[in-house]
Image 1 (cartoon, rainbow, N blue to C red):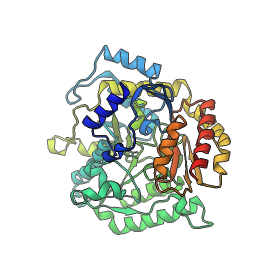
Image 2 (tube, rainbow, N blue to C red; image 1 turned 45 degrees about the vertical axis):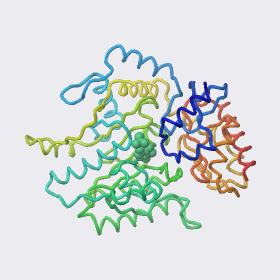
Image 3 (cartoon, protein in one colour; image 1 turned 180 degrees about the horizontal axis):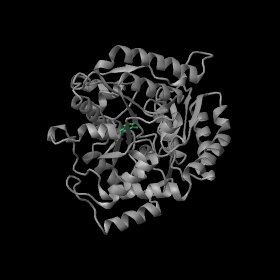
Image 4 (cartoon, rainbow, N blue to C red; image 1 turned 135 degrees about the vertical axis):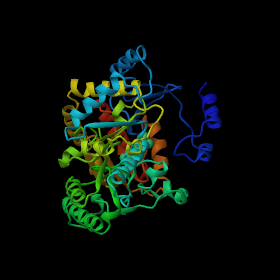
Length: 436
Ligand SMILES: *Cc1c(COP(=O)(O)O)cnc(C)c1O
């Protein structure tokens, strides 16, 4: 059954982010079911999902409360188009998010995945300036090593050569500004000072180019795909001030870092700022269904509100505001409230850091870092194919680890238990020993 399924998958399914030829030697893993932090294959093996299945899962696989909400919703309404129609889950979700973001982000526009949220924000920002008669404001800036998705518009603000280069001819050229990742600080320079130095570079860029700039898009506090690069919140504070000063929108891409990942519900809260656009996806449905949301302000909303159809924001996706996805998001927000999740995570993260002390102090481990429920570090290893070996050894130790280069990271579902944290750290130590 298992063997058969793997071969059929390799023959019929073109897997994402994968050189398919690799699978001549590297086995696929067919997952039969999930339960809590565990994924179970067809052969009786289990794997601790330390990466929350590409950063989406918050409260475990097959969560009984989310399952119950979806089952109830299935009996009522699976989908209806959102143009000209509305439904209860999308209204409730928009109102709940408006309250939670309590920063004047009163209007929710819906998409289907993270990249579509980026597209929507870029289009909405440029269209805002156009509606204001400033047609020349159509360029964007992002941080070095940024990641905002892989559709063509999103790639134009994504600074990952491997994902971009093949499509260079199709992509609009946008500039990047220095990234405040503290690993790049000078010796003796604090993370905060380095962030301020990078903010000064941003100021210089804005000074020179603001007439042509629509928006600055940023991953608040953690640049995920850059290898969990972390930076000081003062950068966001300065970025907000500078964007306001120079009349450039600030887009906070909280697709990966929102929904409590950094310790607060939204990462922007730690800099006490409010962006012009806040992007949510990934964890918003607890990892159940594709959904993305672009939250924006009254000012931007009003610039589109007119008798003229062409002044309106005419973007659409077939599954915009899908009721099942919105209901999963509501159930996810219910769990946050009912279980006081942010406080529970604070305690859990402190426990994790105590248990992870031997990792932090391991002679082959560098830059051990933590923000909220994300941990990352680099491993000195003689193996050029470290990531591949680490992944394979991880599976043998019942861990789903998916290093980026030599960066190992943990981004577990929030329901991970103390026992599972202990197991994760102990086994990761064995793997590092074996690979260094
Ligand atoms: C994952 C991610 C995206 C893209 O989301 P998809 O659903 O994969 O299209 C955009 N921005 C950030 C910061 C992400 O981590």
